[in-house]
Image 1 (tube, rainbow, N blue to C red):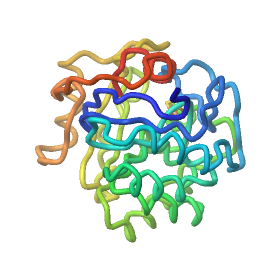
Image 2: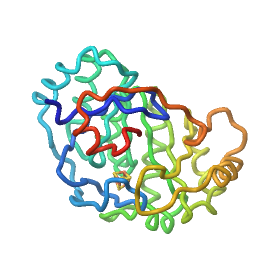
Image 3: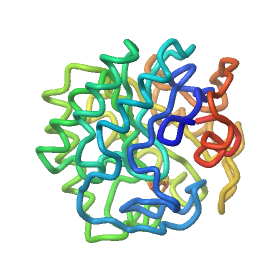
Image 4: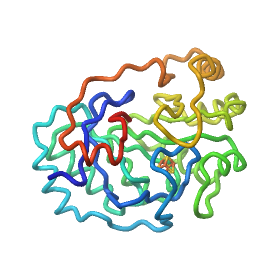
Length: 257
Ligand code: SF4
């Protein structure tokens, strides 16, 4: 029975994505409470990193998933994966056992911490959230549950960009609340020299409405005609067969990410 590993799910960014949830808590464990979060309200507003799943238990599950048809192992799940203090070790275990590239979906909140940047640097792909261009929009959209400064997050991402040899993607969720800030957000995003910019809008069931395809096209024009900008409406998704439907549906209600 898999309880930390879920999917593979059909990811518009990563193909067949085998999820690893290093938190695996009953409710959402996060230091944000984004207005568009599909996991509901933040049940566990953790401020400190800690171990949630021992590596020995994770290793056992990874061994049982050997041979799965997937393109990526992706650290994501019931909250923010960098809150797990053994993330770096878990990334190395996943890569060595499954022989697949490893991605981490992070909300970027802890990139000002060197130990978090060290862990993230072990991944092949880091998909970092950036939904705002200033503290006011950051607080409105991401609703941090602890004292966090947008300027610290930005600085952390800049330091990480300078050292990271893998692929850095910025994921930007657009909703009514921040769509008029697209130009300002694009300037911040481009300053980080990402390898890819992923423009998203919440298509999974949540508390806010997604932008329409034409609104997202308009947002995309603010990011210029660079070849490295992709949008959720234009992406295709592969067919997938999850290892365990219950554990997958708990984290990804429509088998997509
Ligand atoms: S960072 Fe992710 S898990 Fe946390 S509240 Fe935002 S969308 Fe949900």
